[in-house]
Length: 332
Image 1 (cartoon, rainbow, N blue to C red):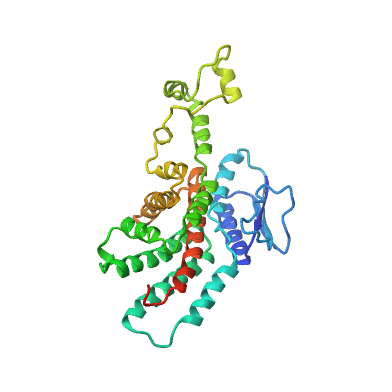
Image 2 (image 1 turned 90 degrees about the vertical axis):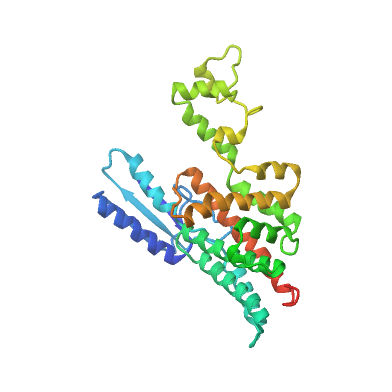
């Protein structure tokens, strides 16, 4: 088995090269992992995934293993390691924000001004840490910390209430609803970005494929109306042709997943409400799970959701922080 993976930052190549070497050594699998600087992956690589921001690879990570009879468990473990790789964001956007912050920060501030500059400083520092982290898990944690610093400050400033004792969703909904930091068009773009990475229709197909493997699962598909009897077709040919439909089927009930109201708000054209629902969904299924002791399982659905959450939060911060800069301290 041979696998080549593009590497976008030198430190990332060094770190994951070591992780894979340790895994092969620990499990007694005969193989080799090598990090090749300045060697771009060829077109026939297994994981030649393009960076969403157009960043070119700085090298490639090659994995070669021989003598393994069942490659599926090996591939599963390697993918768990590789799926933890961070999203590589561009340097220029955070540098622009950092430079503007340093240029505008005064030498001395009042107590009121201190809260403003402290919230911005904490948010920018956390955003910067997220960009250069070496795992998606840590990226998400620091992105949420960056967002938290902004929305808790804005809520306390606008209401005069101590943010430490307030419901988190109430505070970030206030931030997203005030109309000062995110326009309806930007709300629409952020929700579209999220949906482009986290496609529930694909999740339906994955669940259908899994249910088709058992008689009970197939019968449930028929019972729920997902698979429609077609004259002249047998169960086997329906499976082969992948013929099914979702009309009249509750998506949330079928996926056994709550908190998907953002789809309805988006279809209605209420983009600010859709964005609030997306952020609430991310808060519930990612932030709460992580901050309360859980850790994401890097299966296909979890990976897609995590990547969508990270990219959406990053873009939300890149949009909103400069707008906070534009306001005077007295306005904020």
